[in-house]
Image (cartoon, rainbow, N blue to C red):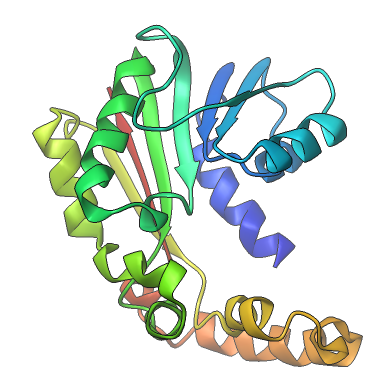
Length: 214
C-alpha cells in the first residue's frame, strides 16, 4: 500500500513545487511523501487537522471549505486534492475545481487523484458504501471536460495507477480483522498484485491522476 501511495504522490509532485496547498488534507498523509518549502493543508474536520498539526509540526493547517478557500488568488505553485471530490455532491465538483484554479499561480499546476469508476473494486465500493457513491461520477473524461471549461487544457498529464485494489476494500470492511495485517497475507497479495499489474489494461486501474497547468 505504501508503494502504491508513493507512486500517486510522485506523480503530482513531479515538478517539485515550492508552495503546495492540499484541499481535503485529512491527517496530512501527503507530507510523508513530500517536503516542500511551504505546505498548507485545508480540511473541514477539526479533529483531523489537530492530528495533522501534532504529527507535522511547523506546517500550516486551516479549517475551511473547498468551495470557498480562505486564500488570495494565485498563491500556490501546486493545488491538489486526493480522494476528496467523490465525497461531494456532483453539483459542487466543478465549483471545487474552479476554486482550486483561482488560488493556483499562473504557470502552476492543479492536480486531482480520484478512484476510477471503471475499476471493479472501485465500482464495488461505490455500490456497497453510500459515502463512496460519488465514485460513480469519477471518469477521466468528466474531469478533463471540467478543466477544458476552465481553460486549463493546454498542458495536461493523465495517468492511472493501482490494479483491482482488494486491499482498499478490506480496509473499509475488514480493517479490524487480524489477517489483513498478517505478513503471509500481505506477501500473498503482493504476488497477486504483481500479476494483475501485467494483465489488466491501464484504463481499468483503480486511481485516476490528472495534472493540468494554469
